[in-house]
Length: 110
Image (cartoon, rainbow, N blue to C red; front, side, top):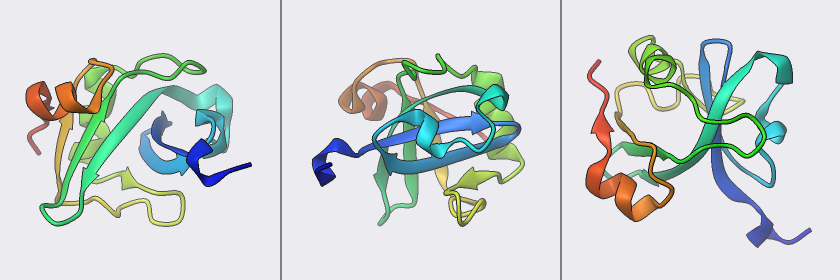
């Protein structure tokens, strides 16, 4: 397996939004039956900004309500750090490209 096989993906499992660079969305899941959807992400560490976009081929698209709940509860991060993105600006859209997500994503107010 090559490193370029890994893509920036995210899922919502229970009430936790989990991000990571993986080959498959299922690689982020502990209990697949509890996943509510997912997609891809773009990240800007310098400006503490995360753009969530698209959908998961395995789990489908997450709802804005589920994404907003995770953001408002500060439950956005990686498997080892569930609150890594707490306090960040987080945008969500259903477009399938990072460029459109950055351009047209909707800011989730905390």
